[in-house]
Image 1 (cartoon, rainbow, N blue to C red):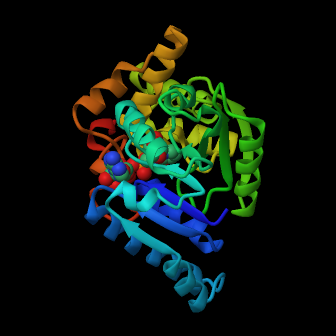
Image 2: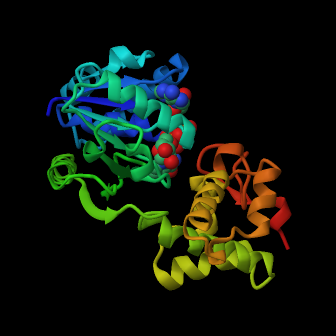
Length: 296
Ligand code: NAD
């Protein structure tokens, strides 16, 4: 495999393009937004600069990595030579079905079509293509250049050969792939989201404050980030939509999102990306303080 097409150049897409390009793959990075592509290239360059400064790569490595990435705003141009497509566009089921339908027509017949979705059924996405055995989940974690895990998700029809190819390719990227089956939330979010939801419920019921809840999990369970801080980092809207997928998919009320989470998303408090969630990020950089609404 040589040619990788990455669809979507947002938070995840730029990181995915970065890791493939750094390992010598030719990456076609596609986004409908030229501004997103520009921003993605700037982010990749900045992240590579940081690696040069830490002497983990050379200036030449940086230049080679950047030269391995070509950007496109049209899918038909970015996909025609793909050996593997990794879709990392906005988390929206209708959008992903449309992209996979187009991709099935545009990409070479033997290309593998992967999605980085956090929660949408791989089987459902695969069903709109004529090659469901070649459709698979390749769930990278954020930030992609740093995080080791790739959750490899087999749809109902995904073949053994395609699964093995993606497991092997993930290892070549320096990642640790873990194979899981296609059920709501897969493994990562099935376990993480109920924990985050329980932390929000504990706050909602007044059992403890934001700092107390995060401190218990950081110092008591050796988590690098407390669950509320992590929820802010992921995006509260993303957490809510994943919980809804699990609630619908399993039909089990235990996944019902906490009313406080629903209220915060409705109020536009989405965490770090909106400037405020459980913490206040409006001071810029990596500084945050407890959001005013959560002060005692
Ligand atoms: P994002 O909003 O940062 O980026 C999405 C990008 O997709 C945008 O640049 C947008 O312009 C582009 N896009 C929208 N429609 C498109 C189309 N038709 N063709 C090409 N590009 C299109 O989103 P993100 O956080 O990078 O998430 C992308 C995917 O990765 C989602 O499926 C999400 O669930 C998954 N994911 C996200 C995280 C995370 O922490 N952010 C972690 C793991 C997986």
